[in-house]
Every structure is written in structure tokens, then in C-alpha cells.
Image (cartoon, rainbow, N blue to C red; front, side, top):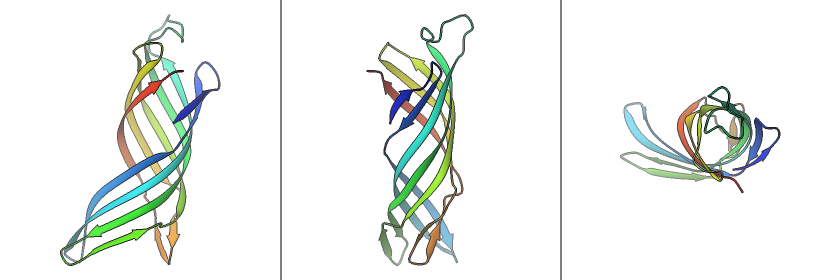
Length: 150
């Protein structure tokens, strides 16, 4: 992602992401493995809050970080494997969703920082293709981010 500073505290970020989701499901006693691969285009506002009083925002080394944004998602590939067959479906449509994040950002140098936190994504619309509709109701993840400042 690439971020643009909107104010001393707020950033606007966008980019392109690749996500892979692995799961198992049981339908009528038959278990199958699912692997979904997504392409995601996010647009997010992120804010940094100094955790220590008295330090200037540009001098702070640890920040509380929050984020809120939207994304466009496409399911590039869905692979299902069970004991009798393997199905591989490509390009299953686009949908849109909302994402929230909360975490901590550590400033290591003037040009390098690391973030650690929790992120939640919820699809607002369904992907539709060939009468098949699907939507991820909620995905919660732990993230580790590396940031470079140029």
C-alpha cells in the first residue's frame, strides 16, 4: 500500500493486495478443503495517536493506530478438494466491503516502522457469477506490517 499524509495524524492509503483463504467444510458428511485466492484493492484512512504524553507527534516512537476503509475484492480462483473430486473455478466476480483495524506502530528509524494489530473485513455485497452468489460475512486477521518512509 502507498499512503499519503492528510494531516499530522491522518493518512489515506491505497494499493493492491493478494489474499489467500484456506478452510474446510463438511456437507452431508463429506469433508472438503477450500482454497480461495482474492485480489483486493483497498482505500483506507489510518490515524496515529501518540501513546506517551509530552512527546511531539513527529518524535514519538510508539503509536496507537486505527484504520477504517472500503475495498473492492475479486475471487480469482476457488479450489475445492474432497475424496471424490477436485473443482477449480476462476474469476467468480467482484464485490465490495468495509475494513477496520486497530494496532500499534513502532518507529525504528526515521525511514522504517513496524506495525502489529488486528484487522476485520466484512463484505457488503455478494459476488455473483453463473447463478452462484457468495459473500464473506467476516474475516478477522492478525497483521504484521513493515513501512518505509521516503
